[in-house]
Image (cartoon, rainbow, N blue to C red; front, top):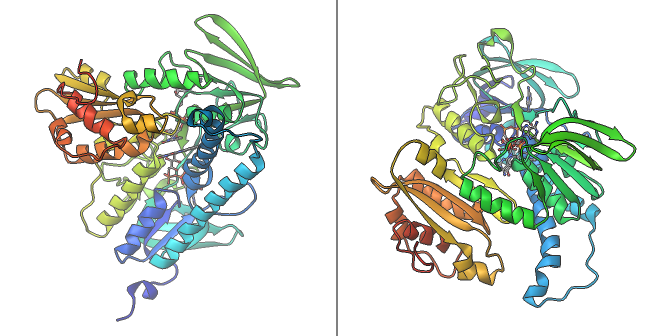
Length: 483
Ligand code: FAD
Ligand code: NAD
């Protein structure tokens, strides 16, 4: 029997995906698994002029930042922790060029892996610009400038996002940079300023702090991690401050000027007008949907008032057969959110079941200790007027965390008093990003705190903290006093 994919004319596909980041490439792969003919168009260009699939996440986001977080954490622990373990180290020194080279190698392996996956699945990779026209035609302009018009039964838009520029501190490389610039410093800045104590500010601020920078983080809001559970946020801030991150809340930046002495940043806070001079300034105040030249006005696709592509709960746009997923649509800007949307639309296109549970998308901030949560914060549950209970278990009482010399933080569970359903789980502590997966699964299955209480957890593991937090919600914790 001839392969259906081989019969498809080269310019006509069942599915064309525009954007090959963590939303687009999984959509293409799942569509191919569903035996549809698929092309994935991506225009990502690296600073060295090479092209790569993987989008922001693999090239300039999740993966390079995690590579540097890992390396810098090892360097930091070597200096601050090894002696406690009875390991004496002398002559340790930072080789930033090698650290950056390793990071680049990790990125290259991961991005080239997408091409391998495409080849194995039969996805046609097209590197260049894609633009949706009326009637699901797609204009493809290759990087060499050649142009052709493709057609598809279904189109998936996955064009991602771009950093927001701050009017009072516009990007001016090499001094005032976005997160991509901050991942590529060739020397450790002596003084680093970060605008925005969000996910990027904390992760990249941590990297450079651990490598020796004096880091000041200016955050406009009066609360730290205002969108997170505030008990969690307070605990995280305490530990980050101990590491030397100088987080200044309620700081409104009014200007930034590159001078011979560095970058002069002016801001106001509760104490009035302030000034700060740094060698490098990272602006990390959020990202905006990127939809430039993505679709023609007659394509039927529209944007909402914030610039996101308008979609329904199944990521359908206003144009028949056209979907949009990932950072360019509403919802948290997270790689795993985009990936699941990609899988959902590829299954829906193939006539299969596809659904996204937006209520249980985990968030992880890869600082040390890590910060992770899923579901509602205690503040949200309280504000809703529902009766609830909480259980908290400190890692200080965890044998494994103690043995690891990583006993900072706690696991916290928020559950309904009425029916015991788990409403949220919030963890600050070692490998919190891994531990949260259990809570995500539990909540996906609408588990009660009793379900977690009755689940056997191996000893000694960090996961026991989640178990004990669930027990603590009913004042039945074994390994910590119940309050
Ligand atoms: P993108 O990854 O932005 O990919 C979109 C792709 O489409 C790009 O390659 C772009 O060039 C291409 N494109 C756009 N328009 C066109 C067009 N018209 N034609 C052809 N191609 C086009 N998220 C996490 O979940 N975990 C993390 O640890 C994490 N860390 C991050 C660290 C940093 C520093 C940053 C900046 C972000 C991080 N994120 C993280 C967020 C994550 O990177 C995004 O949520 C994710 O990349 C969004 O995926 P996407 O596929 O929607 O868009
Ligand atoms: P963010 O929304 O997480 O944080 C931005 C912070 O900047 C907020 O705290 C905000 O109050 C503050 N801010 C806004 N305007 C300001 C101003 N003028 N002055 C001072 N502070 C200001 O955005 P981000 O950190 O830029 O990250 C962008 C996106 O990338 C986020 O949506 C995030 O989910 C994603 N991301 C995720 C991860 C992860 O999952 N680990 C890592 C990095 C980035």
